[in-house]
Length: 73
Image (cartoon, rainbow, N blue to C red):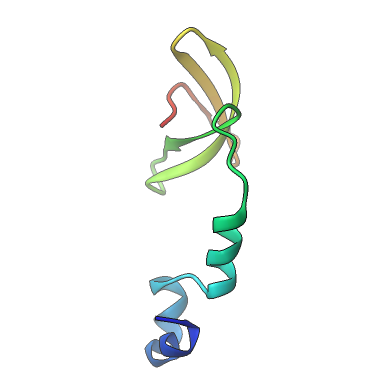
């Protein structure tokens, strides 16, 4: 279903599906598994975070919201 078909849903359309442009940007954006990860968040399911340190199996990461997390997925 493209952007044209989503117009049928009116104001709810942006919440149901990202636009074609947003999906294309997300697919072409590089993701470095050695520097980035996803961490659980109370407001959202998971948020992207930058890895700040590694100590064996323990990884510490900083989210875009400024929160520090001790676990990455």
